[in-house]
Length: 145
Image (spheres, rainbow, N blue to C red):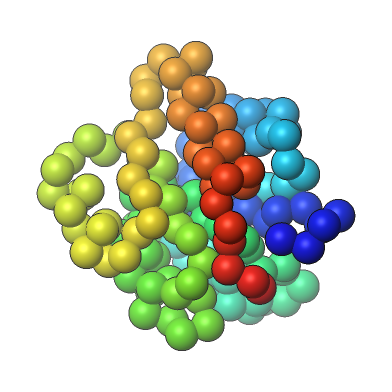
C-alpha cells in the first residue's frame, strides 16, 4: 500500500447492526482504512465496476462479503467478482453467519480468500473483525491497485 493512503474496504452486508459493529471495529484498526458499504449484491457489483450511482467509487483493496443478501446473494457476487478480469485479484473475505460446510467448500471453489463465520456474541464478533483487520491490513501484502 502506498504510504498515507487509507486501505479501501467494501463491506457487503445487509444487517445494520453488523454494519455498525464492523465499522466501529475497523475504525479502531491500527492502519488507516475507509469503509464503504453495499447492502446487496447488485449495489456491490455497481460499486466494484464504478457504475451509477458509484461512478466515483474508489477501487477496494479488499471485500468483506456476507453470503445471505437480498437479491444477488453473496455466492453469486463472489462468482461475479472472481470471473471479472478487472476484479478477480481483490481479496474477498467471506464474513457470514453460515457455518455450513457446503458454503465453506463452495466459496473456496469460487476462489474466496478466507471464510469467517460470524460469532453470535458481540465480543467474539468484534474479535473476529479485529483479527481480519489485523491480518489483511497489517500483515498481508495486498495486490497493487
